[in-house]
Image (cartoon, rainbow, N blue to C red):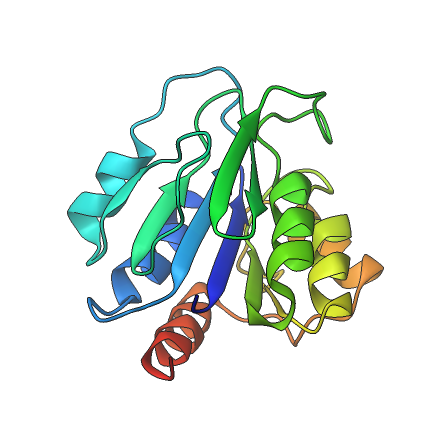
Length: 186
């Protein structure tokens, strides 16, 4: 199993997310997991990501085997968690008023994959992802956050910075470059 990239986004995060996904090379062997705060609303995010990027994207399925070079999106109203080699979906309690939420994904990824995890927190208006980012870095993974001056809603990246010590915040373009380079190194 290669690198695991987990990304959290909420209000104002679609544009930076698209920059990251479009920068991923078609040869990327990482498995990418995305949580967007969408609640029970319908979403076409996998279609958007697939049409703009170089990797296949789809909503994660409960018990699905994780494959390299794919993008998995948390479906509406479901938390997405990772076990070693598979995805798990549930409708557990909301976390930071959100379902899907980043913390369940980030924490489970850290426990299952340790230092192979790269966590990214983009624009959003609550503290979701901060506890998960702390788990990722505590397990030897890499924590990245969007630049606070660029994020339309900097509360999520700011919460991660306050609760943990991820690397210096980066603009969306620099995040995209960093992740694309990380994929090239696999």
